[in-house]
Amino acid sequence: ILYLEDRRFYYHKGFELRSILRAFNRLVSRGRVSGISTIDQQVVRIATRRFERSLSRKAREIIMACILNLHLSKRSVFDYYVHNAYLGYRMQGCEVASKEIFGLRASELNEKQAAFIASLFPLPFPKAVYREYISTDLYPLTDPNDLIEFSKNIAPRWSRRIKYRLQLAQQAYD
Image (tube, rainbow, N blue to C red; front, side, top):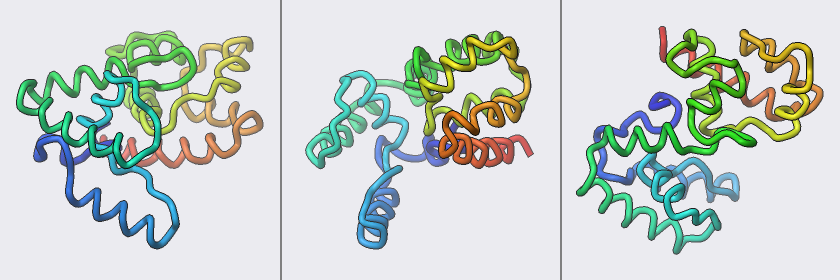
């Protein structure tokens, strides 16, 4: 999760100046901004349930993430994130996602399955794929690649993106 979401999590105090500069470059070059939130900022967003896209919300998140770092350990922040992040339709946190997708507790997942769950943090499991998946005789699949193949016709863009993120996540194990 840290490899995909916030590699410098244990080195910053709630925000990353690098990320803000990178976001500004993306805005200038691509005309859109994404991927600048630290895990701490995402915890603030989850806890406050404020999801609108605005500079004022982002500024509040940065301030609150810095305050959060003064009062909680990084481990506590990370645990909250892992157990409360939205990972897809009807899935809050990795324990629920592991049970819903693979029929296993998070601690029982193999490396490939764990990498798939980690990939859901930036790319949550789509509702259409979930509904189709749980209603098939294939459920639960054990290989994430089979699940990605299954989703190709239902959510082709998501399946391409999650396949790439899965590959990145698996690199963390190497």
